[in-house]
Image: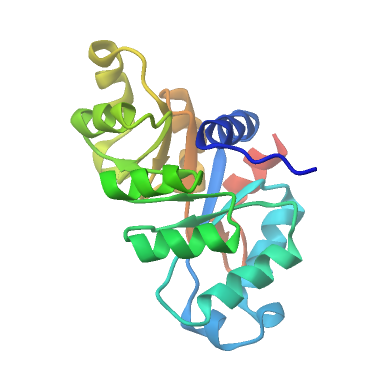
Length: 217
């Protein structure tokens, strides 16, 4: 008998998992990924490498393309145990599609009250993007326990400590945007709960050595 989880349960589950491995890797499909059979795409090879290395949380960026659902369904079938999320959700049609496809969660680069309300109606976890103390407070008022600070490279590592004292308890915060594998240690030490990285984790079709060292630590 399957158990239906609500948004709070889904948030708690993702937070627990990210406390164990505070890393997400975001992959954005290229045109060639959408044209070829999944097994021979660059996206498939990169997913295979990430899973083999032990990366637990991977996001595939949403694209308004008729073949995108087939691409992500093939990825889910190939790696059924991977905590696979969708990235770049900015509109209701995208939210509806990723929820229906069975993603574990999704993330947005922005805070949109309508998106959050619709996600909660569906018992689907949508992590909002925030950039200011006011947006962080608004996200908390919408019962979001987990947020994505975006773009983190613009705000800098010191942003967390600057707002922590006046704001008090902060939600679980993922730093995302413009970061590289070499930033992992310093950003986590600065107070952020997890780090999101993009395609820069790959160098010449292999891992950035900094990421390989961090995963193996």
